[in-house]
Length: 244
Image: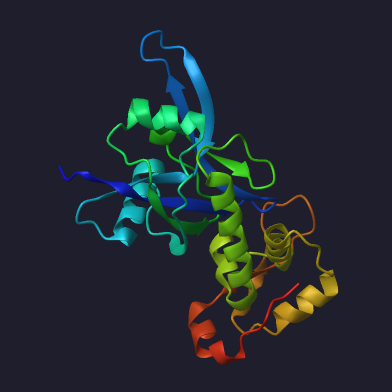
């Protein structure tokens, strides 16, 4: 088996939307006393691990996601590289690496990725019970510099969502305009005027209305839409600046 590179890792900030809130997928980190087995601390981290010798960075990120969540073939993109000298200076992080990964360097450079999924549909499988969704505005205690990592990933997502329609990765295949508006409001942390939002969406040729409505809802069913990548790439020059 290939060895891990001691000072190079990948960390994946996985965002999901459950049609009400923007969430991030975290994994529980629990450290036990090696003798008494008492719990020393419990906190959470984004999904990450060290890169294998001879392994491309992108492959390492895909491997980590598959291993930690069972998820495969989902949107994944680099957003930042974290290399501060104090990334692992916290007492808890020092204890964690000393007891669990003594071979790891004190100065680890981590390549940050973010990933987008529909968290209403996608859930970690039974083999990954320590991995779960948390709202981005209500996070638990985090290890390492992962609070900053999530904040930077969210800022990157906001900038990109203004220029490109990547938000559809967070929605189901068929969605309503109300769901789309709620997604944008959750990502940007702002309210949109309903009429103006619908007017702007109506100019997006790649948001295509279907001749059908929602099913199985308690309220009046709304018309559903789909996002067409083909139409988007054909009309890219006409893309909108979705600023708030």
